[in-house]
Length: 150
Image (cartoon, rainbow, N blue to C red; front, side):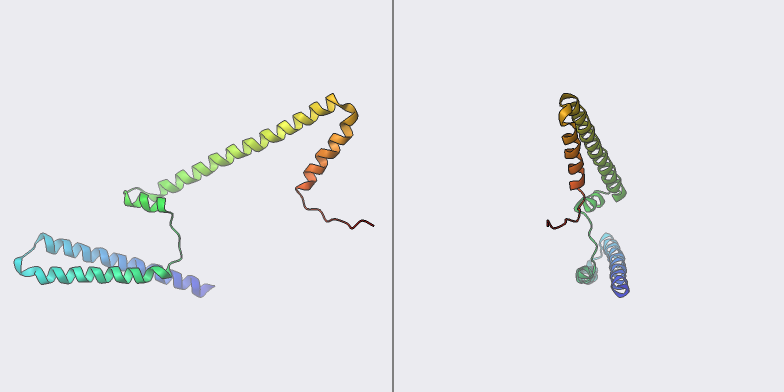
C-alpha cells in the first residue's frame, strides 16, 4: 500500500511543479508580448511552443492522480472563490438535513407510542396482543438466528 500512496504523492507533486512552471512560462510570455519588438517573433513562437509542451506534460500526468474533486469546487475556484466556502456550506446542509431526519424519526416514534397508548385504552382486551405486535416489530430490525421446527 505504501508504494501506491507514495507514487500518487509523487505524481501530485510533479503536477504541482509543472503547473508552477507553466505559470512562469505564461508570465514570461506576457512580458515578451508586452515589450514586443518586431524582431522578437521567434522568441514569442518559442515561448508558445514551450507552453504547449507544458500542457502536454500536465496532460500525461493526469492518469496518475486518483483524487476526485467535485465540479462545484472547481467552479468555485474558477470564479475566484475560496473552496472552503463550498465545504462549509456542504457541511451545514448535511447537518440541517440530519436534524430534519432525526426530527422525523422522533415524531414517528412519538406517534407510534401515542397510537399504542390509545389502542390499549380503546381495546383493553387486546392489550397483550398490541404489546406482542410492537415487540415483534422492534425485533424484526435485528437479525435473530432461527431454529428449525421439530
